[in-house]
Length: 263
Image (cartoon, rainbow, N blue to C red; front, side):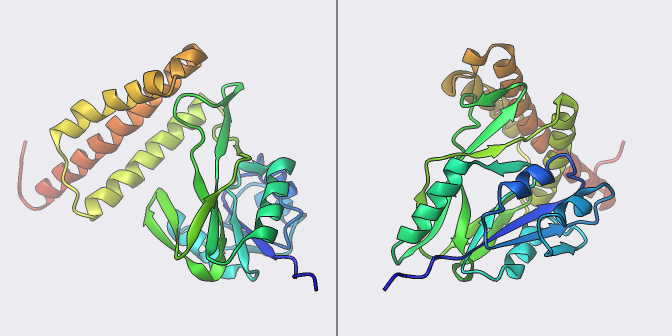
């Protein structure tokens, strides 16, 4: 007797992604269910999403972990596949996922996939962005959400196996979009660290940014990409610098609010 084919729900959260959402959902058309959770987009995102699924839910943004956890709760199949709206599943990855799920032994509750970024006219296999393994496929009943925004993560109770084919990630439209996201994500990260009681240290701003540059440009061979490799290393260092600088800014604001340091 042939075992039943494993069923999979794809979940996607989005906001104003009309340039990417069609490509993303088209690449998920093989899934048994697609759930889109939209944070009240003001562009054509919802209109486009409804061409691919009738499970489009609009919900106010509560943070990355909160929104993705909600999308997870809406999935009705045994397996859940989390895909960001600016990502695309290649036919090769689709076949690998289907094969892995069909052969998945008991005790394996999740699969991690490598992400391959397309930016500045090239695919980034150097500079520290690849393979960037991330758990994306998991048994819905065996997973929960952890981490802090903007670095939420999936926690599973069983074993995690790695797949080999990459998930394509169209991360930034251009340099302006890249810088905008750095500014937003560093603010979120600093706020989360501050809320957790993580103190700022001068060494964070002095030592961590140059090490991040060295890691990206030298250890991860970003120098082999020419100026784009230098740019990626420099922005990685700036991300780290801004995150801790904003953490210090939050500390100073709290001190002033409690009658501390005055000009």
